[in-house]
Image (cartoon, rainbow, N blue to C red; front, side, top):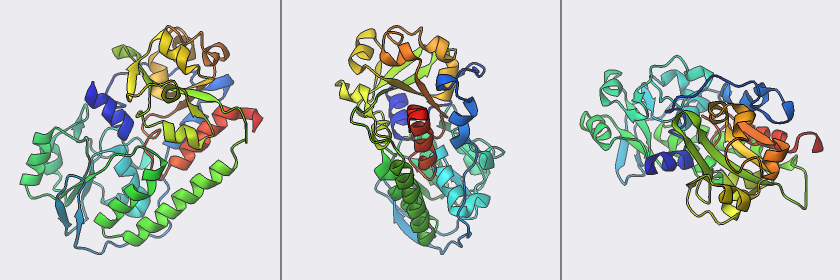
Length: 333
């Protein structure tokens, strides 16, 4: 459970590990088309000019190791977020495998080298990678050690926790791939687009309170996000208040209770799209004890964003933020 919460908060690496039910047609608020909530999940947008890696380079990994990258012809990113950065830098044709959370279209045909988010060292090594990109939560440790022992450079990247991590994560990956200038360009593009979305947010004195719920109905997992869930930064950027964190929930995730929801008092509920599907859409969501009694439950005000991109804090965060803003404010903008 600790590993689940850590991965959800950091980079959303466990989102797709649990089985979910078929899509509900009622997965966006106020009758809005479901496609609106899924828009950010379809494709990544590479930089216009494909950079040429200048290698070798030596970079410092988050695990304290110095990593020398001599070639970047065969790259294996072990999270959807890292895959997104590599593809958006324009080096997607060098990626030879993916983690199950790489849900965007350009990566969908790549072989998956994780099993329920545990890395298969054998699968990775069979692809003869020049470089493996990993998160601090990537594991098991034995598999990662096996990859290193085979002589493959492994760069570990700090997890994303908020908007301030967008640029540093892009820069870290870009430097390791020998394309620092492309990293600077992508960072500027990403930050400019986020700023543009924020300019369009309605200026309200009464900020909406939003509770972030992590749901997996098929596994009976019902959690409310707190201070370290990873959603606070995104909600604040949208001009909202994180109801869970504001109500005093210090942990990343806490089991949903009627009392916790009452204290959070959300005007809207933020969920991952597959989590919403797993409980039977909005009709099922309001049956979770305490939800129907909140302002959000009474108004059936739910914001649904695709699992594999919601908390990535990467090149598509502007699209995530725009989807959140559009669904949260609707016609009041």
